Image 1 (cartoon, rainbow, N blue to C red):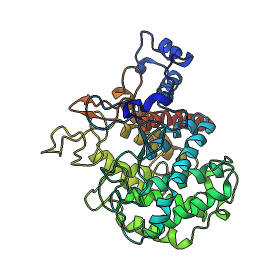
Image 2: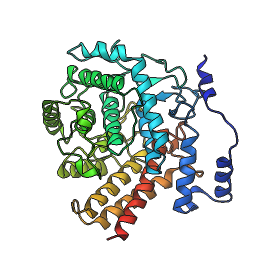
Image 3: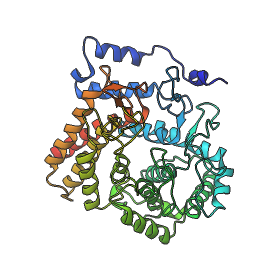
Length: 422
């Protein structure tokens, strides 16, 4: 199958939903719409990236203008892209997406088992590394060209599957025993490659380095299944999933010690990084003071006119690669991530934690960043991957960025409801 055929799994017809979006936008821009319509339009754009098997292509881009094709599956992108479904109540779609990730893990289980036998850094594209990018139909690996050893993919998967189970949903399907054995193999893989002390390629697929965002992701995933009470306050009922997957206390302690040691830095080469926002949302795995320092560092050093840079000196789509500092690509998704972080902090404050000031101050911050995001979205409501020299690149919309907008808008709506009930 040619790569240009990647999209054949998506039936491209004019649906009633498409017509509804056109009607809403008739004579208007996205920014002119009321918030309810914005949510509908943004989610509709995300749905066009969803494939029949429950995955999301990263963007519609076929590669015709050069560079990598994005109309393929990134495992991390799928898991974050489907987060929007939870926030609009479409849990069936979210579960379908996570079961697809399970299919991919099962397909490459031999790699997980091989990696679990190693006790050293696995390398960029070693034979025992699950690839971050696969074909959207065949699920075959696409390239060996860059760093696929990314621990946060496993951390995010463990965290969210455990979270869904604690909420009463079943992301692992009917073959529970077989899947639980696979999850055990994943945990063994993570621990034998020393996720708490050895390098990986991180969220941005660059390295190798030890990343706080990677350590935090795995720590959150293992904590969710171990659960010594850390996440209990999130749930209305106590479903003891720790009985299904044994996570030794030692792993939690090693991860916490390593995370505390590296914070507030992202890595040896990066004092701060947009990926560290994941430690606040979705994982909520850092202390209040650590969260405050992460936010302060990002707001002070990484915010630009049209988005948040990933880290200082980032050369990806850099306007001047020979002088990258000050010319980094600006990611609108960062505004959504900051909005989510502050609306989550507002929820905690309303519930009595009272961190970083009064809830209203956090709500205003969340609104501010959501407004900044909408100001750099396309006129029809799509979130670009990035801006370079004031212009977008060709990845419009970027699936997980589009999802983050839906999460940011909807979580702020929930905060408004909570505030009214006070």
